[in-house]
Amino acid sequence: RRREGAAGAMGGSGRATGAAKRGLEGDYLNVAILLLLYTLQGVPLGLSQTMDLILQEKKLSFDEQGVFSSVSWPYSLKILWAPIVDTVFIRAFGRRKSWLVPTQLLIGALLLLAPSYVTSLLGNDVEGGHPDVFRLTVLFFVFYLLAATQDVALDGWAVTMLARRNIGYASTCNAVGQTFGFFIAFTGYLGMQMYDLCDLETFMYAWGVIFVVTTVAVAVFKHEKTEEEIRAAALEDSGANGSEDSHGDVPESIGHAYQQMSQVLRLAGVQSLLLVLFTRGIAFAGADSLAQRKLVERGMKKEHIASLTVIMTPLNIILPGIVSKQVTDRPLSLFRRAFLPRVAVGILSLMLVIFAPNFDEHPDEMPLGFFCALGVVVVIHSILGSAMFVAIMGFFAQVSDPAIGGTYMTLLNTIANLGSKWPNQFVLFLVDHLTIRSCDADGKNCDVVLDGFVPISLACAVYGVYWYRHFGAQLDRLQDLDTSAWRIASASSSSKLQ
Image (cartoon, rainbow, N blue to C red):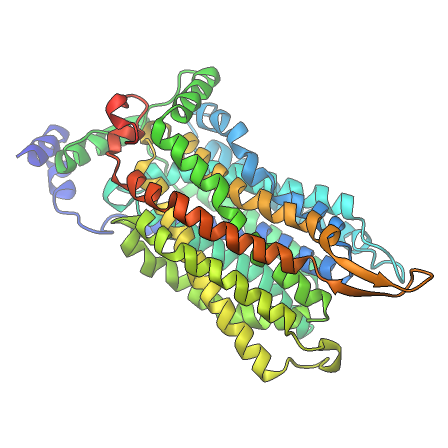
């Protein structure tokens, strides 16, 4: 057989291991390492959300909150330097470790140094102090910049660390790891602060130590496959699936890497996919960006938000594993089925904000009825959001060319992030301008006649229905494209969308 022949060419041990392994056999440790590294990646993201919530409680304007939300832009711009990460490395150390290790060490160093300045940046060093939004934005922008670079390296490493049959688990590791890391740095910190177990400075310092220790351990003890080992594994896999992917090919130069990226962008399937990714986030922008902020504006405490997150996190962690079974088959079909229900959640979020109680009358606890209603909406939103995230990540893993795994995956991830980022930030700057107020003669006391959140939410829902009718069938056509249509070396006119 072809499988036995390929294994035989590698020697007896290759035949014994390659032909016998099924499922995650041989990849359990690799999955654990990926989960750990993606968890670390989620920590600075969770800290950023914690800081954002603190700023919301300080009653910053939505324009100022929009400025701070710029910290996450590196995740939407990382494609600009992804080819450099894919091309420039120390061969003896490892193609992916050459970037992953220093970026994580720098994150650790920042976490060790930042606690000395956080109090003054938040304006807590003087009574009535105002947060230094610009400097806080710069600090967390750097966190995101380093985490985004680590993500490029880790996405590329996942493609070669796991056996080809287990590539679908890369998206699961990404979703579970990031969710858990985010939970620890957001809900975990808020819970410890609520019970006076830890302050922000101590929390950041502790994670700085964890980052440094863990990164050193990975650098020393985790072996990264050489190009020869990757090619040998690809040859073995080719006996099972009838194809041969060049997992270990490295672009000849940085210029060649950007040329490869340009070739990817010229693929008909990729162009259609990018249009889908860039436009789908508008439908969810009202609920995703404004609903929580409007509740906080009305007096909802961050402890209440933390309580909901505690309830939701176990679901967010186990759901990707459940969804991953669908991802290995037709992930875009799952994405399509979840789209309209998630649009409907935007309307439910609008109703919750409109009928929210006066939180100032309930300073210690939230009314039970509202808490239950909010919990149901959050659960539904989380299920649908996680399903769509894992589905799209699974599709990326299916179609990415392993020869330029880091650049290819990062190109798709970047557009996916950008497609969510720009609508969310845009509505933050827009909401105050659409809000109609009635003020007294001196202009000091104003009542809200129409909250800008209302027209934004309704417009997003109408757009979502239009988007689904226009792009729904396109998702099926993208899913049906042959794998060769996504390869820059083998794409031809036959790969074009019909």
